Length: 306
Image 1: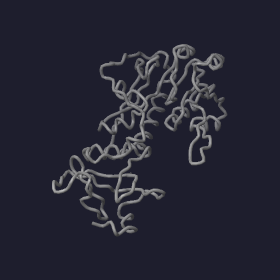
Image 2: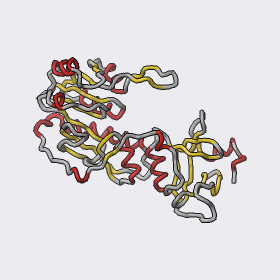
Image 3: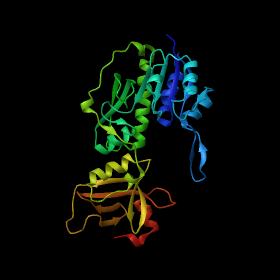
Image 4: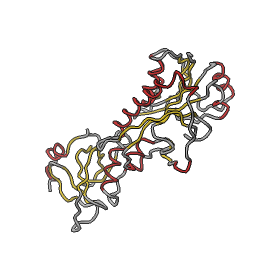
């Protein structure tokens, strides 16, 4: 059965799923995305990636501030959609909206639910040291990622994965899972989530990006990877703030120094004593500069060699 689909999404993560639907036999009759936001130094209005994709493919676009307004709900009803597909939309769908499409609303979520419900499942999985994550295709209800499961697929988290690399693999995997199931999605069996196993993936805050040397090097290294490319880990070195793009753990300690001390500063890295083991910084960025290796940094600042 060819379906009329409303797609609701906002960031880059949603693009592969939208394109997968556009390449299917089904009709994407409208795209819902968050309103344009001011961004950048000039604070100019910026369209979401999903909006830009919709413009490119000549799809009608709707950008309500929320979905509680009577006019917005009437507008959605008039689209006569069989299904709403939600991928990182960023707005809560109230019960009366969930009931509008003939087959309800489904969500493509970047974790193996019920683990990591919420806004930042990719980064939280990295920080926690998870070795596996995945994509969940879920029938939506009024809760936050609490609906019945339709399908899941696993994805191995690699030792060098960053927030960006894992994001990209999961976005592609989500599109693939959607493609494989969209034709018969209304007939898929459902499985209830075990709420006792649920973990909340709270939204990233810039304050989290400041590294605390009291923490173990393993946790700090995970954060550096998880916060790449946003909000980027930060640390105070040489009386200035640096962004930290890459690091590795050295499974050794040095009791002769206090936590936070720079043990060594050579071309192969800057070694810092943490609450447990040493963290070797490999790539950093000064204010207004580019991300560079420690070797390149020291070539320009030989006074920091130690």
